[in-house]
Structures are given as structure tokens and as C-alpha cells.
Length: 284
Image 1: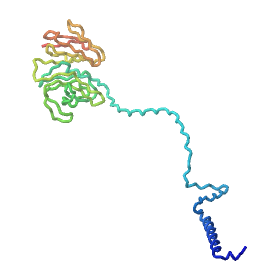
Image 2: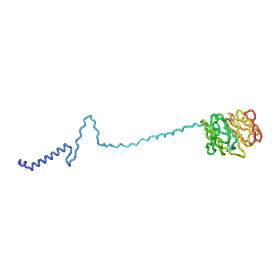
Image 3: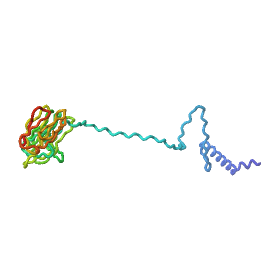
């Protein structure tokens, strides 16, 4: 081989070109970048020493979807009970309004007596209400005593409230009288009755009480008026008129309505096992 040919410029240029290419490959290997056209191959991972923890990878991990399981049927929960409604503890009143009675026709500006069968045992009041709407018009007596069983009304006006002296003027109409209680007793009301300026005749119900005696002993009534016998004894009582079957009145405030139209005009005497003696209905 002729070594002198190696000294030619052409040969020397080729050697230099080869050395440059070799240098590029060495540089690319150190920088981790392959020459164009060749794929980058990541260096092998370093082996983890025994006992060392593998650091978490920043690469997203693909996880297999767990197999869905059908949940076991659960028992239906018990419904929440509604909140209890506070009880007002209202109990029936021991008293019942008997007068005015059904069909009574009162004339205004005259005294009339409102009667209830038993004393309620607690204080209260007497109200007047419209018979159809039951709306209270006013108060006839603002404060009744616990032992009262009647109230006499002038049938001309009423109090506008229980705590005021202001009054309203009565108008003709159909009403009910209400005995109200200042305790847990329920109110009790009369049968509907009419009030008018004038009337061809009044229809009034009178009360006679049986107990330790007969009260009143003498009762003046208009022929055709009703009389209610109220028995406040714990025993059944009898009322005996001559020529008439005995009137039976139950105990503890029971009442019996008697029509005076079957009696003759004049004094009509009667007796009762509630009292040793006679009483009289004077029919006019």
C-alpha cells in the first residue's frame, strides 16, 4: 500500500468527516438523544435496593374497574311519626243551659232568667251569640260565680267585652246563650230562641228546682208556657199533679219539660218526694 496516498487532501478530508460523524454519535449518546431517524430508547431503570420503597410514579396508573355488585335489599325505614298535637284537655261541662229553651220567644226590655242545671264549680261568663253563625255578639254577664245556676237579664243590652263597661244595644233576632268556663270545661249553649220588640204572646220557659225542697214554691205561668223541673238530687224524683200521671225526673241535673196548657187556669197544686208539702203552679 502506498502510504503517500494517505497524505493527499482528499483522503485527509474523508478522515476528518468520519471523525466528525463518530463524534456526533458519542455526543448524542451522552445527551440521551439519538440521531435523527433513530428512536430514543430509555435507559434501563436502576435496580431498587432490597428493603427500599418504590417512589410513587407521576404517570397515571390504569386500574381495572371493579366488578359491580348488586346491593342486598334493605328493609324500608319506619316512617317518622307526626309530631303530637298538644291536647287542650277540654272536658265536658257539668252544667247545661236549659233556659232559654227551644221555641222560647222573649220580648225586649223585660226581665228573663237564663238557667243552667248544675253549678259548674268554676267561675265563667255568659255570652250571647248569633244562632246561625255562632258569632258572639257580646256578654250578658262578664263574671259568673262558681256556684251560680241562673242569671236575670233585662233583655235590652250587653257588654262588648268581658273587660269593658262599654255596651251594645240589643236588636231583634235569633240567638243562643252560652255559658263559658274559665277552666278546661267546654262551653255549653242553649237552644236557639227569639227576641223581639213585641209579640202577641211570649213563650217563656219557667224553672222549678227539686233538691232539698221545691224552689220556688209558687210559680206563676202563662197558660201554654213550659215549665222545666230540674232535679239536682242524686236520686230520681217524682212530681205529682192531681189527675195526671207522675212526672219522672232523673238525677244529677236532669230536667223534664212540662207543658202547662194541660192545666186549668188557676192554682194547680202538686207534690214531690223531694219535699214534704205542696207547691203550686198558678196558671194565668
